[in-house]
Length: 348
Image 1: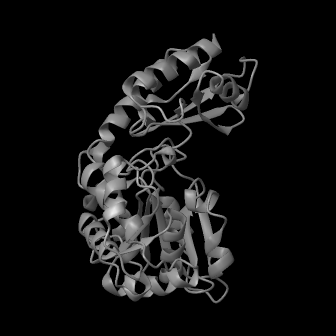
Image 2 (image 1 turned 180 degrees about the vertical axis):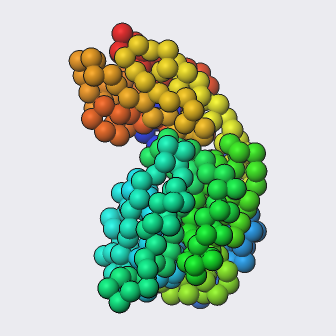
């Protein structure tokens, strides 16, 4: 069902709360969460930790805040984080770890399958030297947005965790769309983060809650993370009104992500059959479709998006000749098909 009479594929952040969420929000029991007394927040945190196979959770206002709080908790001033050059944390989060935490980063290329090559990670680890920052943390992203929303496997993550822990390095997973990865791979989300020191996942993307993410880790880690959440202004009061929607999201919105993946595949196949456009179908594993415009087309990505908008299809130009389209629960199968028809009409 389209929103505002548009097929809005710019992001899965375009979701709105479901009727069940609105009902739960209206009826939520609340308290002061800074005092740890909001029962609905506490329930959400416990539920999130259980889903991740970790000891504790911390409700935060956004994934960016969750990642920042995790890095502030894991690292000291002057420490270094290894992350992908195409990672959301590096590209789209305002360099918060550096601006707020005086934490350095070392960027290495993401591979086409979304991973960071173990050889590249090993080369990036700093030696013990007075001249060097200490490599304290490795940051992974699952699904990896910029590489097409591809899913990192449990086996790969276990390799990174084993490598890191053997060197007293911690692992944080930016799991904004970890449930998309779990559904795509047919595994439980906890399998994708097993052994990692922390994970942040988002409630307000494909899971359709209006606000919020949850940071999960050990009890000791979360106790310290609460302090850093306060440091960055993330202490909320009667936040149970928001957490109630997150509970519904975890209960009702995870399994249906498969529908979004199927709709993304429909759109990608239509694009693949359109001369002048290129899409790597092997990377269309979850709810994202990235595609490129051939050099011979007489318009760029921004212009294609502008023309599509005139046909009620909204997409995001992700580069001069690259476009991103993201499926979510408010896009039907018929609308995915319609979006493909609109794109083909414009190009032809």
